[in-house]
Each structure stands twice: as structure tokens, then as C-alpha cells.
Image (tube, rainbow over all chains, first blue to last red; front, side, top):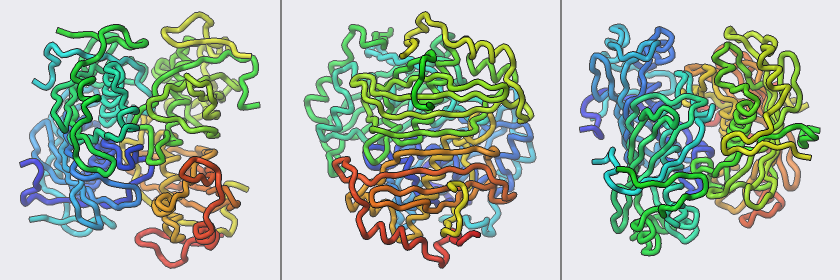
Length: 155
Length: 155
Length: 155
Length: 155
């Protein structure tokens, strides 16, 4: 099931909602959640020792092939939100991440989603995920604390 | 089927890719497509005589409940893209729009997607779409030209 | 004076305000104006035959060194705005553009600004603007109509 | 002088550069710095006990009247940046904030800037900054640590 993390390791990233992310409805614009998912994914990969900045420098690109978000409750400026990120599935040429966003203080769930990425080489051709990154991602985030981020296995 | 427009009226909106919409992969960031979908939706609603700015002023909000995008080919700065927008389904309290984005010059399809919206009142409660807007949207865009935008029924 | 165009040729670009550009104040977020200036600059350069996408492909980058904006009146979703762009100054290694944003329908002035750009080579070193682009920019926009954009010399 | 903080109290906010903030030049887009300034300003105000979310709820708006940024070196995805924020000047109806952005790890200065804000009431009229907020801002940030943010007086 896409919206639960099962017993997969989850990386939680917490930050303040930025004013620029709101719209005239008085709540966070729906496109900002894709940026939050990406920030959660970045932290997940750093926690695995597979920093995406390094992956790109090595010549592999994880292009977004599909994205989905379901919005349950609004986020507002001044609130802190937590993005939980996990790996749904790793294949030879593709990887799918799952996400859940909660209000960090009340615990209310605000949104869930997933993104599917295909691995491209520098010429834009679909290719296999290089073994070094694939095994680090398969291994998952290290369970010790990662800077000021929280990493844990959730039930 | 979500990614075809069937014989529903379609509103096509064409604009240049903005530099700020690109990322370091050299292509348009995937979150920009949600903004393009929204711009296509705005034009669709204007073509129906149901300008969303007026809908909000009247007290009804169409909050995004779900969004989906599938990316097929990259868009790049300097290219012109066309967003085609149609209504997938109108219910008493919800409306779903479908989208396809093409390169305006080559005709290549770049992405497809859909967004589901629920109607809220000013207090954030789910409510029925006011009859005036519902009937204008059900009626569809007027088939005469709409400013410099192109409106047509596609097979 | 930076905020007037003198008798320099001006390129006017008109578009709708996007919903995503608003914030919870109910008006367009101030950072969106830098994106609008950039879109005006892109159109100005296209009108000169110096498409910035081609300039980058040729190996020259116009990095932003300084940006300034003064906000006079708010822009709102559903309005059409016109960005007027001109060249303030061309030097061997730098170019400064000026901008004014008006409500396209009422004519009210919403903002003015300028951006200074330095020319970099692919290794990020400051370099002279290649002669071909420098002369096209010095020559200015062609006075015939440019697609659906309006080009004119303003008093 | 606008780009130094003198002996004013400074609030430092540190975060990762987001992928969506980059552009095809491979560096952070210049408009993102206005969003970072705003995030620095939000933290500064929280540290003063004058949370801007509360200020807006109380009926006062700090609309941006002018913004300026000078870019000295690029920021890149995967780097951590620190935004230092201070108050340049408080007047009865306006407040000016100053900013400096550094690479959090190397200490390199990336950009400086300032923004001027005027106080508006709910009807958009310029008004005096309510005394409660004015005195909290004049008093400055509390010198004890503020969550995981760093607050200090810099020489």
C-alpha cells in the first residue's frame, strides 16, 4: 500500500512553512508539497550515504517520471511540518519514494504522496542505477541520528 | 480514461517556458507542471465564463484534494508549451480536471495529469458547488476564440 | 535615471497573474516580480535576435550580480500585467536591464526595477560579452511586431 | 551602511539548499534569495517574540515596498546556507531588514541584501506599526538560544 510505510525505515525532516509557499487561499499551495517531498527525499538519500548531489556528479540522474499527492488538511505559514520519506520500491532502472507530511506539533496528517524516478545517463538515456548507489539505497538510512534530523523505523 | 480528452471540449493555452522553471538537470522542474496545469485550468474556467477569481470572491473555494502528473519528455527554457485542459468529471461537491502538455512547435507530448478539487465555503467546510458555476462549467468553454487563446473540441 | 526608459526601445510582454504567484496577503508575492523581470528580459532578447537560450548554448552565461525592485501597488490573481523591459547600459563585461510592471487593463504602475548581469564563461570566470550578442543587444529590438508581443519606443 | 550589521543583534538561520531552487545554470536562482531573506526575517521576528503569523492575525501587514540583493558567489544544491538577519531601521510606519547569506560550511559570503516594509491595515492603508510589535522588534531577539537556531551579536 502506497500511503503506509510498512516496516520500512523512514527519515523524518522537519522545517517551518515559508511565507512564499502560501497562496491567497491562506494555505500552502499544492505545488509546494512536491518541493517538500523532494527535500524529504534529499534527506533520506543523505541518511543512506547516497547524497543525490554526489549521484548527479557521478553521472546518474534520477528524473521524475510520475508524481502523486493527496491533500488531507491545509498547512499554514508559521507552522512546522514533518516530511516522512521511505523507499517504496527499488528496481534496476527505477526507484519509487513514498511520503507523508504531518503538522510537527499537532501530529495531524496533512498529505501523502509518492514519486517515481527513472535513472538516466548524461545523454538522457534510461540506464541501470549504478550498483554503488543501488546498494546504499537498498541498505537504507543509518539508524543513528543524522545531524538534527530524526531517523527511525515506524511500526 | 484519464489521459485522453474523449470528445470533451478542450482549452489550449500556450506560453514560453520561464528560466526560473528550470533546475540544474537543465530541464523544467517537475513541480512547475502543477503550476502550468493551474494556469490551463484558469484559462479553461475563464473560457466558460466562470473566472475562478470571481468564484473565490463569491465565497466558494476549489481546494486541491489530489494531483497526479506523468512526465514523458522534458521541457526546456526557450521552448513554447501548450497546456490542454478539459473537465474529467463534475460532481455536486467536486470537480476533476485533466491536462496534457505538448511542445507547441514540435507537437511532442511532454506530460499528462489530473487534479481533483473539492468545493469549500469560507469556513473551510465541504459544500456543494454553487449552481451558477456548476452550470457554466457543465456547459463548457464557448467555441468562439477567447482573446489570443485557442479553444477547440479535439477528437 | 533607472526607473524611466528615456528614449530607449522597450519590449512589452503581457500575461495573466498565476494563482501560484499569490500569497496569503491576497496579492502577488514580491519574489515573483524577479521572475516576471526575467520573462520580460527573455522577450527583449528574443526581439533583438539574441535569444538567451542560444547565448547559453554558445557558452556565455549572464549571471545576475544585483537585483532591485520597488513595489508601488499590488498585483492580483486574474489580472493581466505588462512587463516593459529596456537596456539601461551595456558594458564590455556587464549589462543592466530596467523594468516597469503595469496592470495591463487599468494602466496603473505596480512596480519598477533593474537587474545587473555579468558575463561568465563555462568555467564561471568573468569575460567580455561575445561581440555577436553585444552588437545585437546594442542594436535593440526590431521594431516590427514580434509574435503576439508588442514592441515600441516609448517617450 | 546597509551591508554590515554594525553591533545590532543578528539571527542566523541555517538550512539546506533545495533542488527546486536551482536553475539550468547549475546554481540557485536569484529569486530564491528573496525567499531565504523572508525565512531569515521570519526567524528573526520569532526570536523577538513578534511572530509574523501573529502580527497578521492581529490585523497588521508588513507589505514589501522595496527589495535589493547583491550576488557575490553561487549557492549550489546540497550545500547548507546560513541567512543572517538584522533590523536596519524601525520607523513609525516602516521597517527595514538587512541580510547576509553565507555558505554554512566554508563561511564564504554568497549574497547580501535588504528589504523595506510598510505597515498596512486590513484595508491596505499605510498605518503605524502597532506599539506592541514595534517595541518587541526594537528590543531585539532574545540572546538565549532559540530552538535549533543560533542567535548572536556579531562585531
